[in-house]
Image 1 (tube, helix red, strand yellow):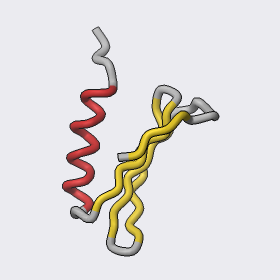
Image 2: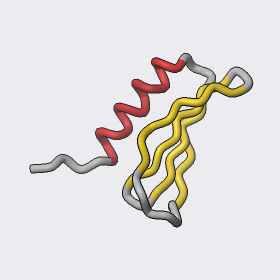
Image 3: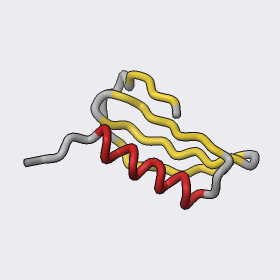
Image 4: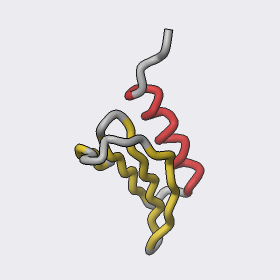
Length: 61
């Protein structure tokens, strides 16, 4: 998991990108750029990212 400030500040949707035996999921939200990189299958990585998003995105009430 890599996280760094996003100079553009815009939000982007999640993009899955396989490369050299790894799966990478990247997206932007709340002024940050996120990259999740792993050798697990794409579905497991997507599940991880979904769980992560529930922890970093505040619930609207």
